Image (cartoon, helix red, strand yellow):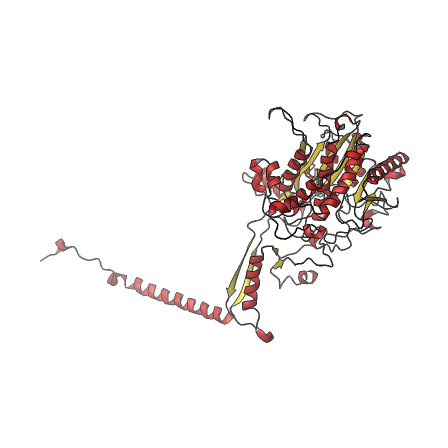
Length: 567
């Protein structure tokens, strides 16, 4: 791609087809240090860890998605269309024995006109001027935005807030992913496996008999836009600091985050902590207690072995980093990797169900696939069990920890719905009727986008409500949904700091129709002959028109009326 980029004068566009099977060596168009500069480490705080100096978390990242290409690049997902294009090329553009191909030749035209230019600062300024002075403003770009999904184990009133001495255990994960192409973000390992695990943990914890009397509350959070420099978590921290969120930073007792968890080697699940905040003795003691609780919770699940890391190792890219920028809290990130990512397709089109070994027997119906418990579902359910038991103990529970057990059936239905076929009977049953049309026959895509809430956000919101809700005898007006949405828009746009280095400033250009067409083009000789024939016809028609116009009084004499004859 770099070689092609250097030959822009000869390249008008690229059409890319999906390689099958996925490249065995891996492929990641992301960077080697994801979200660099927007986490907790900087040249002034933990400089030895800043810019991934110690660990390049995504060693396969080539940064392709962050390059600027002056020509459009299209992904061909439809195999039938791809076959038509390839067949056209083979029929008309390839000649036997390497000879020069003969005309007509097959050609392809790509239409992808983008309105935005240069940078976020420029396009937002232009949009702002248009909105201020124009009756019909032409907006050229929009900030990436959506909603975080969150819920408290013990719900509070919709307009209420926690008291300063109330303590909350935060269970967090991310909802979004990306790839090189717009709205193609399967995110199986980078996002789906973790938020599916957290949903299963929430369901298991909710079933504990004494959740209503636990000393501390538990908040489940699903952050949107984390792929793009922590949009969701930075906004929630900002709202907490400004008193615009029911939970404040001071309420947070501990923070448990699920990173990438689907590709465990053997049985190991690694516990990542922050070495900088632990220089505070109080925080270090709290982190030690947190890790001990996780280890006790994992002791009863033989399929999961929790492992500690060297205290001098930094945190991987995670939402916890944004909270640590604001306040020292005890937190841990659970992941399947001790150092570099196990995910060979991080933020790429190949981070699919197959990449985390989700497969189904042949000749099964969609309904049978939906309920078929895969090995990956069993493994993630074990992780969810550990997380559920740990959250129970962190919230102060002591009596029913061993009874908390995640349901592999729930996990397998969620994996099938998010990674294989969204339009299934279970998703249909939990969504409102007006939202069911969003479910397609393929997997959901987990790109944050600019029109929100996205399909993933809606489905996770309703899945969380379904898995943690209780059957009550109330009217629709009396019933309150404990699962809520919180805006995931970077504070930079609210503050109009479009060039901010503190907050994410990602925007998406507006565009006209994106489309392509294929057709046959003639040789230059035939084109020249066609031009000359057309020019000759034009000249001939002009001469004929002139002659007719000059003799119009003869050629177009009006006939005399019969009664106008004179003698």
